[in-house]
Image 1: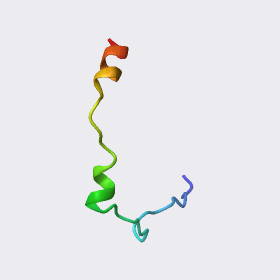
Image 2: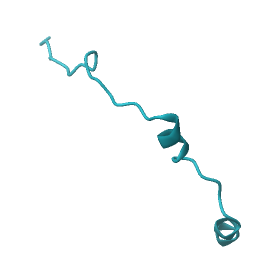
Image 3: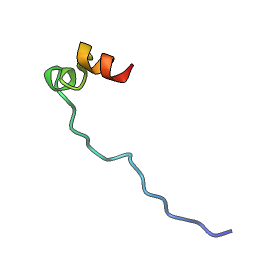
Length: 38
């Protein structure tokens, strides 16, 4: 069996969203959107 070098994620640095940025990712459905989907 051969050894395969696989990519690792141990040392990756990811930027975190602030609470304000994260809050903008969720929005309530509008009445119009709900009526259009039903």
